Length: 303
Length: 323
Image (cartoon, rainbow over all chains, first blue to last red; front, side, top):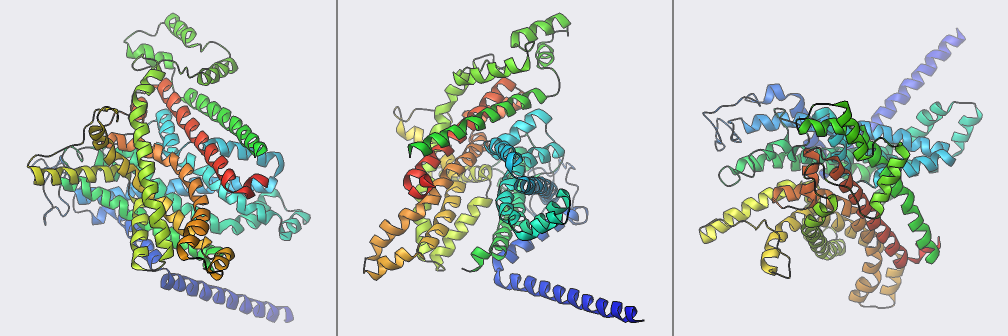
């Protein structure tokens, strides 16, 4: 009986705790929205674009790959809100489906590259010594390649297409994340609870994943958000060069490649709208990232 | 200082060797045999004898380590082999296109610094006024705008404005003329691409100048300078700006990498026959000798740039070289 009430009491306290935690999280979130107006605007833009990409089939008024040779290079009208391109494809529909491509490439490159970098960075700091030295030299080598140059070299090997573009953008992001995470993790390694965990006989994997990774989440989240913007820009650049996503997959960079320059003066909408989509989404991601940094980085919070 | 220089230069060597090894391995990861591709493109049959001969010609029958040593040795005296596509020596292919890219890169840097430092400093000194807001919007926009789109739009505007003003559209010239031969023609060609590439550069440096300046203005020595009655102009120029520019110098070096990436795309927009365009063509044509030479060259430029920046930083800030 006694144990029973004890358990109930404990559960009650625990659920109260969780409730309080949840409340404080909501409060923190609300404070973020109130204080970081630009960041909230950025977040809304990103959510809007990601939602557009997810619900592309429902939102797009036309098939993005269907040619309509009776309506080539038509100016924006009620029928085609953003006009049509040189093959008579509806620009709005292509931009809506392009959001899906941009988000798939941007999010997966940033998340995969960031996570691999996170584990390598924390591991490098945790093991220290020779492992750290060797990993650092390897990061140095990869960091010597500008992002787009390394991505182009990878494309030269694996070829074009969505999947290869993701690989090409992910690889240069790994050392960039590992570097930043490592420097934060170095400070955490010296904290007594890591020693305590080691003394208790916990394995390396457990210490790295349960004790160190959660403590470098702030720089990691800031990096990953910035990576999404960089990846979207890199994908657009590669596709614009004809070395990224290939036709008929709708992608913003690709839309600017085809006829955009050629028809710039006769049909400027072909050149303008996909670019506006790129700028808006990267702007949204960056504004959100900046606000996140200001909120998570205590050094900046003081100011 | 000398000890620092030696230490820093010594760090460059393993990085460059590692990069060479990476490029060497990457180029050998390419699916298929280079010789099969080569013989295939000339319509020849895959005679094992011809392939063996081709391997011997390319030195591919030697041990991998010997091949790597040969590859590094080639780079050390700027012998990159011949282009697999045009058959011309890679060095001459690059050399012919270097001036145009170099000029745009330098012009973009000059434009970016000339805009970024004064605007960034003013933005910090007038924090939270309308000037600050405008500068910050300009900066955030620069980081989000892809250079190729900016290029397309600026060309569009030039076309429309010139045809409205003169009745006939004007396009910047494509052919490269050295600046000492025809300065006007040269600059009219390089100006728009430089602005296009430089916008991002300016935006990033501006943000850095602003935040560095904000930080420095709160330092104790600025308060001391104020307390002893120094005039504001002297405080800003002598004490604040000089120290605020340190991180900006580093950033300019790091951003040079983005500049190279930007050039690759921008030269395509403006139809300029520079090194960036050559790079894209090399990848498109699967010209591996040219691609590896250009990748290695970019890495060398980048690493040396960072070295110069680090040395400059150490020279400007004694705390670095003595730590």
